[in-house]
Image (cartoon, rainbow, N blue to C red):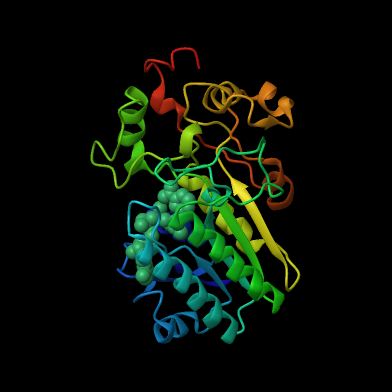
Length: 306
Ligand SMILES: NC(=O)c1ccc[n+]([C@@H]2O[C@H](COP(=O)([O-])OP(=O)(O)OC[C@H]3O[C@@H](n4cnc5c(N)ncnc54)[C@H](O)[C@@H]3O)[C@@H](O)[C@H]2O)c1
């Protein structure tokens, strides 16, 4: 059992993470610009305010840093850089001053560069894609997550242990309508089209993860035994995409032969396996996703046979 500060605790993901931690007996303090519904201690403040963050980390043993502008549609470049980058620095610095040894940082698969079309995206070099792949961020959000990881790494050099979770698009219950709307008319979907909090995401392969799985990954990262100074990064996704096309066929259609297939057996076993290498998280974090949302698409045109 640990005393854990969760930033962004009132957000779409934060509430799942808080529930997961409480269900396993952890003691949770929530930090956010607004209070959430969970029956925990809340501190309502801005994550870039050093005095407030210093207060928030008092007495805590770990921080799960989730607060951020969560995509390129939710803020301009200046806001994204300020909240995501300065916010991460503020949290790390306060945590170190408090003697906190463990941070779990909410990163994003966007660091690899293959997410949103609007941000001059580059095709991946190979599949499956793991930590060996270069970071090719081209939009402010993805860049802010790379900078956040760089900040985390700097603090591990000073003795903290940090896990950065590079999650794909999170398929919250609130996103179900958007996911279906995109699948019905992918060519014209611009989203949010049916009242969802943002556009159905996940890049050209329509990656996704269920928030219950992602919340469990946060808990596993919190509880993972790690030596002081260790820095771990994991790509996280459901075991299948939400795309109508099998992954290799879609990559070939979109990018010709540009994407080297390094391990065809992954896609022979599961044709809809994500771009990202999930074996690292399975091996090291003990994380394999239990849920996926393909059932939302059953029977829609293009999804009849899968
Ligand atoms: N939603 C996705 O598909 C997705 C994919 C990859 C990574 N992520 C990451 O997941 C995390 C959670 O995002 P989410 O989907 O829950 O979005 P969200 O907007 O619901 O949650 C973000 C939370 O951070 C809080 N916040 C924002 N700015 C703040 C500030 N200046 N001070 C204090 N609190 C602030 C918001 O109030 C909100 O509760 C983010 O770090 C995001 O980058 C999300």
